[in-house]
Length: 128
Image (cartoon, rainbow, N blue to C red; front, side, top):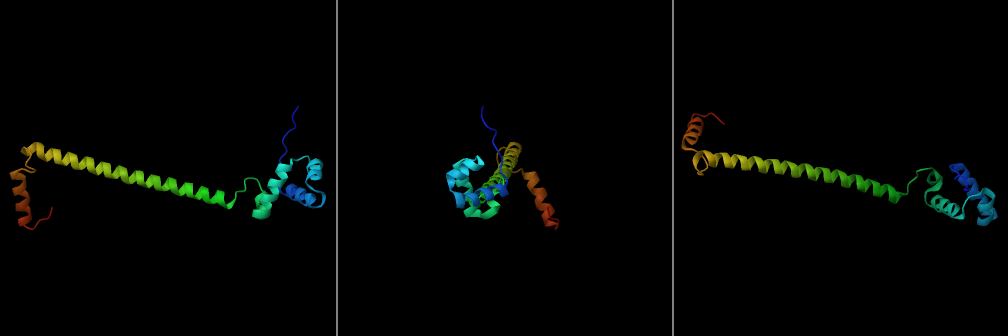
């Protein structure tokens, strides 16, 4: 039968690390029934981050920076996708507008009657 995995509080981890300083790794491991690897990991984290590092879910500065970079990357990808979509919509609208003009006047670009109307409106000082 396997033993249930114990969850250690930050205070217990500190106590175990203090005990290790005076009694050694092997004796500490047997006394508290915790693996030597766990003790060494806690010691490393404690030396890098202090007592805050022993809390559950504590992250190293590299892990926090990596998470921040991932978040920024997702935001940039979303912005690029948004801009790409806007460009596609504009291209589509320009194609439609170009096709409509060619369809009405045989490919000349605009009809003579529409052109004269625009000119007459502009000549009177009315903007479009």
